[in-house]
Length: 332
Length: 304
Image: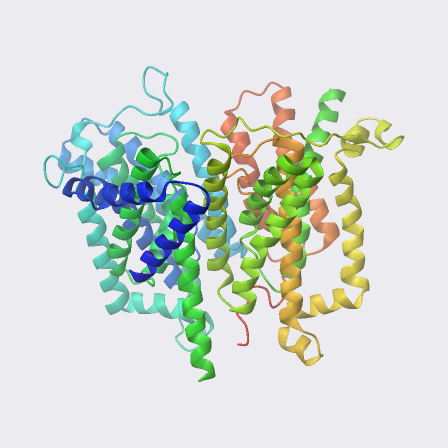
């Protein structure tokens, strides 16, 4: 928290050097994120929901030593599959339709990650490269879908038609935009935390991430199997993020449906030190930052891309603090 | 058809030039044992730096600005991975994110909120007498901006330096085994720092090429994954300067294929062509799997 405050202060100084109105920007940042009950529930927590799920996806992967930078692409294909499922199953009752569409998103996200998984385990292709390439491919896939097979019936706008009311995730309390997806995200984090901490599968995941050679020789762990599972789970969580975003917020598919959730997710996971339960808190912190940044762009004309600077600075500061601590301890 | 073929070669070389530049820089970085994932951010910074430079000092100022911005970005990366020995992938990802935020914010702060309006002069193509008259491939290869010829010269030069000088030997030794290089009296950290700076200058210049020979303006996130493609090109080129040049050219040709296919009147969705470079990178990487050997110390955390 101190770190986040320090980074925000540094960024503010930077903004003032670039000649922007800092006082007005910070006021907008605060009021747009935590200034009112409405800002918290309808902006911050709504924004935090996809960040928690993608952040969890990244944390699971990183713990297994899988550098999945592809949460963005997995989010996108998840959103696309959910929209397609919701539109195809519009005649179904809510109790069937919602599980179906969420499952479609998770499966699609997992399948997208599986490509990178096969490329790594069978062809030794660095997943950092492959997942980023797949992010671009996913973005063009969405662009094609919303102008081709999934375009709304009048063929005017590059987007799908809205999903039926029965396909929408219920609001958590009336009058706000906060939806069931937030609860799903928190539940996923707690479940993942428990699995990683207390089950044999979670233990294997951590061992493979910490030292693959030891895991193979001493633990007789099937490396490629654990790696594949980490990829699939991570992709499914990112896909689920896309699913709840469509079913809870956007209600339709269009280009730029993600303002870079999959990249912010890396900062969310690292700030949580890859702890699945802590991802809830860091996801909310970044949700507040992004909600505030939107208000800042609207009210103070400060580009919201400034959040990328804050995120990057937080990651670098964390990395630096850890390295200084490690090398300090080694010397002592 | 012959005019389509000429346009194809021209477009292939034009696309390949910035990729080859960035990849040749990254080649030295990787041969010194460092994987600079922030190359994407370096290119983007270079593109932005060239806009700043060009508004003050014309095209020459633009190239100088791009190199300076690339150097600064790479120096930050070097500070973390060489001085602090931090994780290369996490640091690289963060610096790319930082570059995206910095260039986007500064661009809007300096040039207004809309962008696009800004237009700067682009460097003209120089035809080499004689060579540019060769049928079909001549004007594509030899009627290009000066920076393309610089790449033609850089490839053999880099090869000579890497394989025929003491400096090149030291660089490769550090990439294979830092401990062994250190035992032989070399300075691995200094060599890595210099290699990363060289890669930064080349990557920054690649960003400048995008602005000064192609776009004529700056667009947020205009590097569009070229840094990652360049890293893939290093793998496809088997960590060798000639291989890297060939891989970049093949990649440029594959990207230029869309113009050829469109000229043939194939009615495929245009997104397919836009996605093609990324799909080809994946296919290419899978294709060379098992048949290439990376520098033994690549990306390895130190002193283990």
